[in-house]
Amino acid sequence: MAIATTMRPLVSLALPQNGAARLVTQLFLAIAGTLVLTLSAKTKVMLGPVDISMQTLAVMLIAAAFGMRLGVATLLLYMAEGAMGFPVFQSTPEKGLGIAYMLGSTGGYLAGFVVMAAIVGWAADRGWDRHPIKLFNAMLVAEVVMMAMGFAWLAALIGPEKSWQFGVVPFIVGDLIKVALAASLVPAVWTLLKRD
Image 1 (cartoon, rainbow, N blue to C red):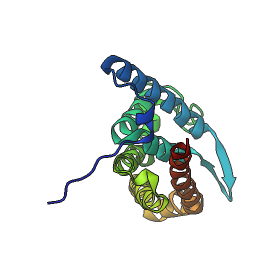
Image 2 (image 1 turned 60 degrees about the vertical axis):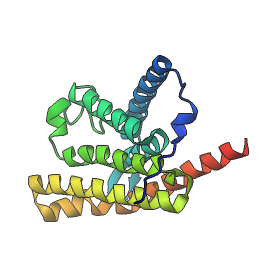
Image 3 (image 1 turned 90 degrees about the horizontal axis):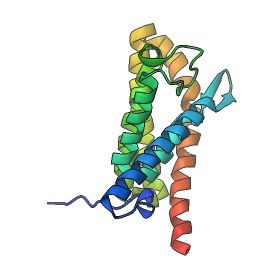
C-alpha cells in the first residue's frame, strides 16, 4: 500500500513553530493573500477582444506557496470579503457587489478559484512545487477544472454556445501563459532558496 508523502510548501519556511504565533502569521498571510487577489482582479491585460485579469495567476501562486489548507482558507476569506460587499472582484463595484455579483456571469469561475487553489495546494504539499513539469501538469488540471466550472455556470445563464465563445475561447491562450509562468516561478524560488 502506497503512502502519500506530504512535503512542506514555501510558506512553511516563514511560519513560526509556536502555536499562537503560527496562527497569527497564517492569518496575516491569508489577509495579505486576499489583498494580492484583489489587486490581481483589478489588473487587466488586453489580449485581443477581451481584457484578462491576473487573478488566475495569483490564485495559482498563492496556492503553490501556501499549500492546500492555507491556500483554500485564503480563497474562502476572499470570497467572504466579496460576499460582504467589498469591491474585491474584477469589475466591482461597476457591475455590482456582494452575493448578487457572485451569482452573476462570473459565479462559476469564482467557485472554480477555490477548487483551483485546492488542486494546486495539494500538489505543493506533495513537493510538486519543486518540479516545473509536475507543477505545470497540476496547474493545467486546476485551470481546466476552473474553466469547466465557469463554463457550466455561464452556460446555464446564456447557453453553451455563447458560454464557449465568450467565456472560454478568448481566455485559453492567456491562461496557458499564466499556467506556464506560475509553474516556472515557484520551482525557481525553491532553486534560489537551495543556493542560500
